[in-house]
Amino acid sequence: MNPSRHNVIEAINLTRVFRDFWGRPKVRAVDGIDLSVPSGGIFGLLGPNGSGKSTTMKMILGLLRPTAGTLRVFDRPATDVSIKERIGFMPEESYLYKYLTATEILLFFASLCGIPPSARQEAVDSLITRVGLERARHRRIGEFSKGMARRVGLAQALLNDPDLILLDEPTSGLDPVACREVKDLLLSLSARGKTILICSHHLADMQDICHRVAILLDGRICAHGAVPDLLHDTGRLQLTLTGLPPEKLPGLLQYIEKETGASPVVDHSGRSLESFYVEVVSKRNAAP
Ligand SMILES: Nc1ncnc2c1ncn2[C@@H]1O[C@H](COP(=O)(O)OP(=O)(O)OP(=O)(O)O)[C@@H](O)[C@H]1O
Ligand SMILES: [Mg+2]
Image 1 (tube, rainbow, N blue to C red):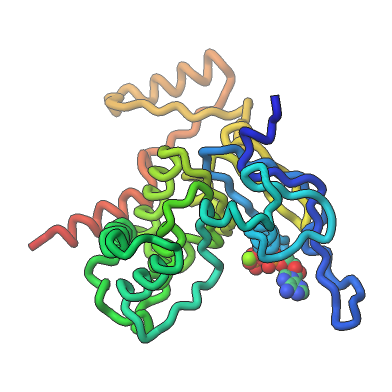
Image 2: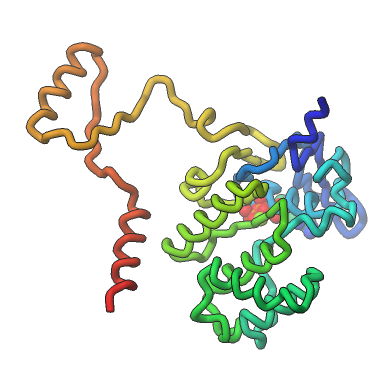
């Protein structure tokens, strides 16, 4: 069986060297990485500033040519034009024409994607709703906050209903509610079988949604794998008890300590700050 059939992206010894004005090697931005991105999951590419994440993404998009190594996307060379219609991309910064409204710019991109004129308005309306821009759909992009412009960038990346979605810092600049909505949108796309590759510095967001991650450092992969495997710690586990009467807690802790020698730590915060924040803001927004 050909293993690459199950991987949407397959890179072997992928390398990109940037050269200076005289053609001398200046930076090894990506330094011989092997990368397999399986179909239908969310893959996080993590790493410090300048570690080669965006360069890797640009090579996957065929915008930059590798200096060495092989890179196949949908089992074809990354530069093959025929795969482009199956890929959606949201860059680190979207350069959007500021005098157009969100609807107008997305209709423009829809025409570039080859969506038939009769289907464009419906496709754009549905995406505007999915990225939460209904109330701003007729406002000019130039007036948008950073987070609102990010949402337009995301809608544009999804316009052609791509099978592979590449997102460079998708949650940067988003408020917590928008961030949760974007993460839920990405999870629902992945559940529909889409493959998503994300570069990000937001580790909590990545832990929330990524099935697999790779950590890049100086252009090399220094750790990679399925998130539960990477975070598995045999010496430490979390036990969640619902409905425990408070008066039973001291006895239970004593019992655990006596029987096992382990020191239990009690954490009463049963929920994340994100879920608390989202609930407070949603209640407030729903109030008349
Ligand atoms: N066009 C270019 N010309 C020369 N060097 C470049 C170019 N693009 C990127 N680099 C260099 O390649 C290295 C990797 O850059 P890259 O943009 O891939 O990093 P990154 O991991 O995306 O960082 P960040 O988290 O800041 O977005 C850096 O040293 C950068 O200066
Ligand atoms: Mg980058």
